[in-house]
Image (spheres, rainbow, N blue to C red):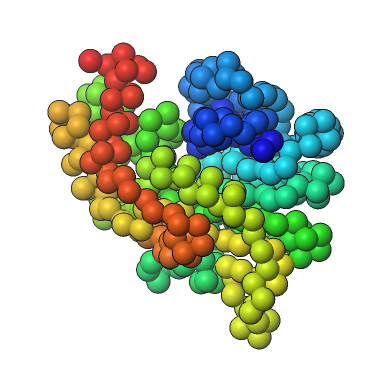
Length: 336
């Protein structure tokens, strides 16, 4: 197939593009290569993709409606995976307009381009952050999620609502994936594993929020990408049993689906740090701090629907995943 993937200079997008190309798909990769984090890492990810047959790079922003529409009209992709977004809960506290531009205006442009070109299936990144003030564990797509605690989360919830509108009005099949704390080689420098590894190797203390009383459903990148590919191949269909008297938030009478995509096995943050210390062969100096605004103490994904519908089965334990990340980090940054 010809698949348009946004965010191909990013962590998940670049990993997904490699897998799609390896199975013989054509990939049109879209990214504006912004400076939210080190551009050199984004360029290095792209440098591994651009020589590969079947990959086409397009450097445009999702907010650039004319350029995006022209790209869709020229390439006419059969399916689309939208992973480009302004990421980060904490950054949204100080740079709100970046999230409106990329995550709302940009996503509207993606939806409209998919409608115009009769795309077969749009898969898009949502986030576990949409669960916000929810405390019922594990988090389920069948739970109501109307209480976000960051603007980032609010934009991701809005994406789900916008997608449903296009599924309902125009029959555009859409599937939203709520990602749970993705980690692994070529990861994002603003994420905990990257920040911790860099600080420990440089002999600096690490910031441990909520005094370490945190849990995350850490999910290895290969498991995430497998889930995305399986979902992309499983086009969303209407739920014939959907009842407006008792509406199910995860499905619809329209061709619309939401899935959690996580490891289904939350890990205590202190255990995560302990494994990292073992892999690095070095103890961390810990700076214990209160909970940050917009953050939540725990995440835990109910992935039963994804397992049932597409056979998703995450299988990488943190001991393996963190070791692979550390090996990559030492090699990429030249740390002995």
